Amino acid sequence: MNLPVAEQTTDADLALHPEMLADAPLLADAMTSRNFVPHKDQIGRWIIKKKIGDKEIEVMADLLVPEALGGAGSRGARLGVHGKRVARKAKGLEAALVDKSVMKVEALDGIDPRSFEVSIAGPGALLVAKMHKIGERIGQDGRVKDKDGLDVLRLLRAIPADVMSARLKMLAGDKLAGPVTKEAIDIFERHFRKPEGEGAQMAARALSHVELMDTTPGQGIPGSVHLSVRFSASGATSSDVSIVEPRVRGPSSRPDGAVRFRKKPELPQKESDACRASHHSKTL
Image (tube, rainbow, N blue to C red; front, side, top):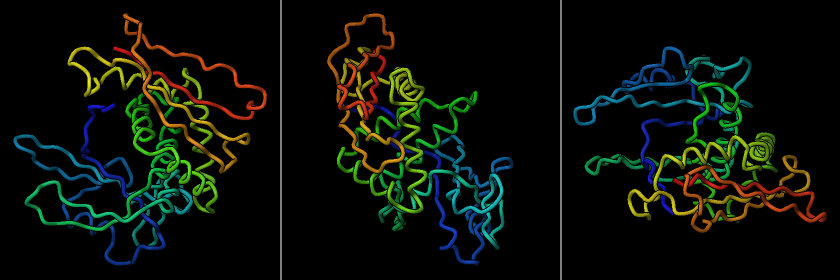
């Protein structure tokens, strides 16, 4: 199943480790030297305007520091000589400092020779960060973005179950990333465990606006998407996490295009210490 969503983005999230920052150059100077300007309202957000064809677009770069390492205060990260307004704190990014790998990032323009080797967040870190983002926004009018739910679906489909399980288990046992990872698991349980959960609904709504690439144009989604995740008895406090591969169900028999969910049967008593999260997408 291919989802026709944008493969590129005009924003970037950069996680900073305070202990790895040198005193010079100053972060603000480094950003302004490349024509980025600070956002007037959002601490840590830097903007540059670029012209693409005859259109001018804004490209945003967010400089973020894991909350556990950001010092006192509510939003701005305390970064010594760099000040407290150049970057902002973000809960959940602790995992990005643990689950990461070095990759070469090249320019999208084929004639641009620039490339850099940078540390990129791994799948476990991406899921943890996304859960905290969703958990923070749910219940706040205007801040919930259905695309975040769709991102969870795409992530779980793209990463093999055993790989994601291993990453989450490793993160849950890490001193820095453990607390936020366990909270992320709890957020998933609360908002994705049941079909009526807000996370599952977000993904369903997002899917209602896209058409699968492998369907005939105009025919919509020929079935429904099912996600299943099982956690251990102690749930969010356990590092024993396994994820069951998402799979595509058969064609929908509902002609009205309504959101359809099927309830999972009750688990046997011996499995009552586990939970399943299931979500069926909307059929067009």
